[in-house]
Length: 521
Image: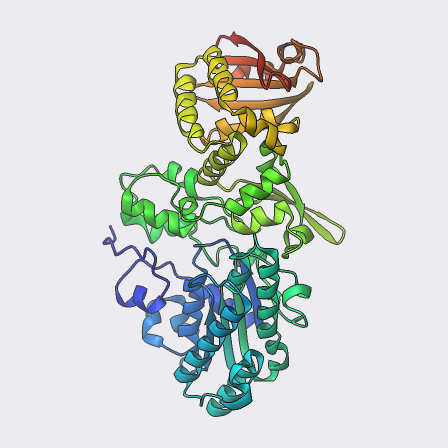
């Protein structure tokens, strides 16, 4: 068996990983494929997916540091006789709160690049001119080396995203970055290769005006695994770490991110799992999606629908300070991924889904806090729900959910818009089960209709139908399950099937009926 190596947790420097003998998943072959296919590229991936390491790898490649690539795909494919000038700009560190801070950060990074390239610092009127400084740096680097310049920009959108809940500041940041990126068009003759990465894909009109040659590889199947680890990577590179861990559980918890090609694992999750040997939501816990949850609540999104949204390719690429589609935000931030696609004339439609158990469970846990108005309630509720499912006691669920709705303060109901829409009650139910990471089928199709919710858990099938009594007479929920034979679809599993009709009252703000029938194996 291969010897265990150091886990590169939090290391984004290619040189450190190679010199310190860390595990490294070889992406250099894909990197060279990309370089050979064109000149200017953009890649969007969620946070902590290895974008910065990829950028640093490109830097070392173009600078010709051959010794770092010994044994990798690039060693025999790259022309090591050439060393190109590289300008690297990174917005990953810190939070900037205004345009003045942004301009100072850019000027400081340009100064660092000038020193690294041995290019004289500009003084006089151009000293504080961001666009002028950047353009002149590119031209001087080309002139001094007689080689066209490589520009690598990491976290290109972070100054905007850090202020997305303050639209006016976010617009300032957008204009400041647009001022910087617009230089690339005029400097084209001096450029060999351009690569930008970030979390979101802002429209070309708003941020990349004039950069028509910038090729977006975010949804290019060939580069789906350019960041992230594949199944093969885990089974080969990380083989020494696998003993003692359930391989199927690793896949269920952390795999599933897909950009129209090979699915990948989140590297941050995998590395933390190998260190701590325990399944936990490591990636999710590094950045609770406060802005996303606020947006979903304000828009009264029906939570059972979140994990099965449809979106066009155009919509997934539609993102700006003033235009933030729910599907686009969730996809670009990593809370949804591509499940399948349907091609129609001039367009592609994507079926989206939660990538894995970590995202489904963690996001719904946070959503449940928002839906209930109390961050402390969901934890104990979900723990108790699991105990009841393991006990196979559907009747006890009635008391659990009745007490939950009764615990929500009256003032919260009165002041919260989300509690006023019809899907609120079913959303509460769904998010309880989803927070456990269970196998849930929403609007499950049978030959006689659609079941509101089916949960497969703890050796049993739990079939739910939801009604609001102000809209439908009492008793219709369990009656519909029986009349339409919803249970027949699951009788051949050889497990108990629990039929549960749940009825809510908007006036009572609670359950008014919870009818149960259990069909034996």
